[in-house]
Amino acid sequence: MKRLLIGSLMLLAVGTTAFAGIHHRREEPREWHRHHYSKNIERADNCRRSFEFRKMEISIDEKRLEIRKELLNDKPDWNKVQKLNDDIALERSKYKTDLMRERFERQTRRMESPLNSEALIR
Image 1 (tube, rainbow, N blue to C red):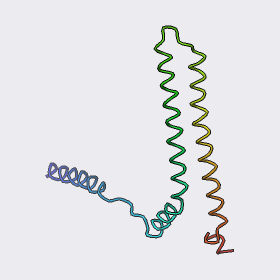
Image 2: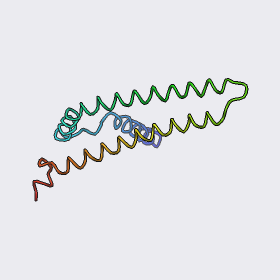
Image 3: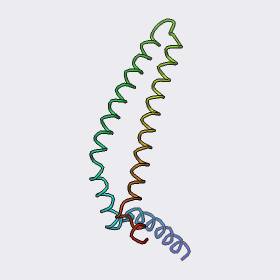
Image 4: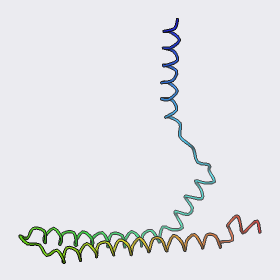
């Protein structure tokens, strides 16, 4: 009897954990609409940003290639390698700062928008 009870409890525990993985949190329709709408509005910004991102990645890849070429030499110029690494880090930080600036401006525009729920309450 004990074996049957323990076996059924183990089976129940395994079954519930397996079944729990099937269910996902569903978004409310309002959240989905807001997300979808904001994506469509900012599509032009995303295209410009993706162009800038691709341009930056190509530039970084070129500098990495220069680093590899320099490291293939018998005596690499470590000052040149350091400068190239600094240039790569500088380009990434500029791009990241631009993204942060755009995100901040978008957030302030959204807060100042007449469609903002806080603006409607006032």
